[in-house]
Length: 342
Image 1 (cartoon, rainbow, N blue to C red):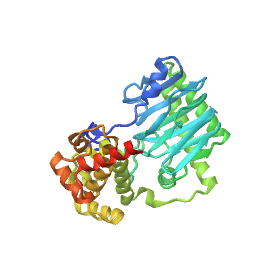
Image 2: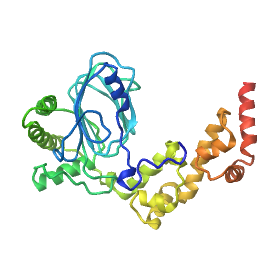
Image 3: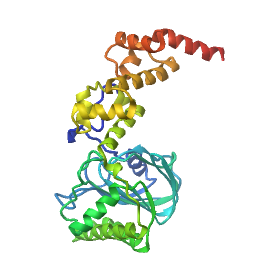
Image 4: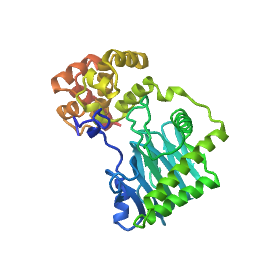
C-alpha cells in the first residue's frame, strides 16, 4: 500500500517483525504441529507476565510431510537461534544460501533479513528461540535481559561474537543439540510448575555452550557489521527492493532519524555509499520501480506515480521526462507495443 509507514520507523510502535502467518495457517489446517510460547504477533501460547522478559518466541514445529509454504524473506526483532533436529531445509540470508541438515544451528542477528524454504519446506522438526536484546539498528548496544546470568566478561565476549561475524550456519555439538531438546521439553510442559525456570536455565546453558563453540572455532570478527555505515547500507538496500518502503513520503530528516543519525552525518554516508544525495537516491530508485510497473501496462500513470512515492503525477512526469527524454505515457506505449510486436 503506497505511503504505508515503513517497517523500521524509529518509534517502537511502528516496527513490525515477521508474524509467521504461513506457519499459523498450516497449523490451523492441521498440517503441522506447533508448540511455542510467544509474545506479540508470534503464534503460540502467551508468555505470562514478565517471565522470560525479552523472549519473543521459543518452541518448535513438527511437519511430517512436505508443505506448500515457506517463511519468505523476513526479519525478527531479536537474535534468533534456529536448530534443525530432523529433516532438511533451505535457509538463506543476504549473500548466503544453505541446505540445513540435521544437527545444524542457524543464527541471525536482530533485523537481519533471512528466509526458510525455497519456496516451500519439507518434512522437518525445527526448534528456535528469538530473544530481543533491544536493538533496532546494527550500531546500537545490545541489552540482554537481567535473567541472563553469564558473567559480564563472558556476555561481552558472546555479544561481540554474535554481532561481528557473518557465518550463519554452524554444526551443533551434542551438548547444544541436547540443550535445544531440553528447551523443547520445557515448552511442551509449560503448564507444569517451574517450566519458566527450566527454560531460563536451559537458555543460559545454551548461550554458554554457544560461547564455547565460537571460542573453539576461533571465529574472525568484523567490526564493520555493527558500524553506522552498515546501518545506512541496510536502509538503502531495503529502499532498493521494497516498494512499500520506497513509496513512503520520506524526508531527509526522517531517513536520518530512521538510522538514528543527524541529517548531515546521514547525508555523508549516503553520498559515500551511492555518490548521490538522499533525495537523488530516492528519485533514481523510484523511477527504476516505475519503469517496471509501466512495462506491465496494467496501471494508470497516476497509480504508478503514487505507488512509487511521487507526490503527484505531474511531478512524476517531470522527473521521468528529465531522465528518459519521453513522457511516462509515451514510454509505456513504446514498451507495450514492443511486447505485441514480439
